[in-house]
Every structure is written in structure tokens, then in C-alpha cells.
Image 1 (cartoon, rainbow, N blue to C red):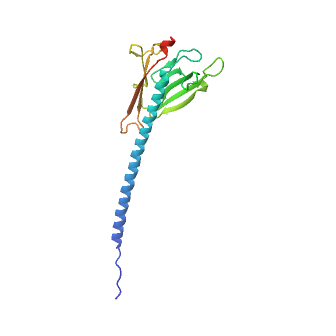
Image 2: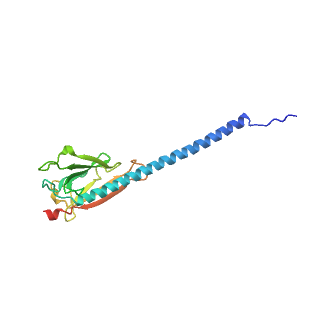
Image 3: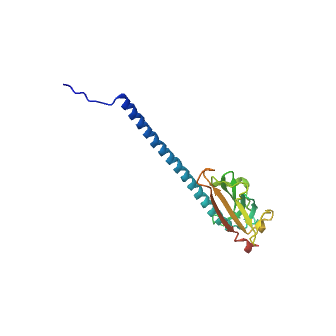
Length: 198
């Protein structure tokens, strides 16, 4: 007598394939969700870290603001979204013209080296670098705020000589409107070299 090995029926095979496919779909979805969530967290961390490093560098350079190689006053121009000044940022005894500004969602730094004799700062020679992306400051959330010696906020930017203290305020979020919420960074920079030069 011959014995036949019993295998799966077609119904059993279909049910097995369906269950296996559903398991693969669930695992694939979970992995994709995990990577998507983690990539946002990594992107947010990178944005916060680059903004923090940019603010630290900027505050250090603002504190060292000094008269230019042409003798111009240390502070060139100010607004709620930009601050332009002179500082020897690379310690080579040549004063650079520095501009920090918000351009869309990018916080940038412009730098001009003086050239020629007598020295001249040519706007076309400006080197611009992005310090931080995903900056979410709006029209009512200034990047720069300015204060006089008594601590009063300055709203009239026509007389830059009144500025003694600058507050820098950046709001960062890699994907606007998505949790985690916006991250706010701020710092203060005192203009240290003005009193001795005035």
C-alpha cells in the first residue's frame, strides 16, 4: 500500500500567503515610520546645533566689535533681521566687515575683507555662509533687539551709537507645524570696545 504525504490545500496556502503578506506589510510600515520619525529628530537636532554654534560665534564677534581699518564706527547698520559691524574675527590685525542676517528661513553670515591702500570694503567681495537653516522667526519675532546703556530697548535705528547691548533671538524648527515644537535660542552681546574708543 502506497502512502501519500498530505500537503497544504489551496485554501490553506492562500491563507498562509495572506497572513505572511500582512505581517511583512506591518513590519515594513513600522520600519518606515521609525526612520521617518528619527530622520526628523536628527534634522531638528542638526538645525538646533547649527543655530546654537552660529549664535555663539556671532556673540563672540559682536563683543569684539571695533573701529574699521578705515576708521568707521564699529556698528554699520542695524535692523530687526540684520546686524552689520566691524570686528577682527580671525585675529590677524585686519578688521573685517561682518553682516549677520535672516534670508527667508536661513540665518546667514556675510564677511568682507578690506583691500587696497587705503583699505576699502567692497560689497562685491562679500563671502556669505549659511549658519542655520529652518529659522522660523516671523515679522513680529525679531532676530535682533537693541538696548542702550540704561537697558531701554531702542526702536529708532537711525543712531547706531546709542546701541550698547544686542539680544539675538532665533526660533528653529526643521518642519514647521510638526512636533516637537519650535526651539527658541537667544543670547546677549555687549559691545565691549566702544567706551574706550569714544
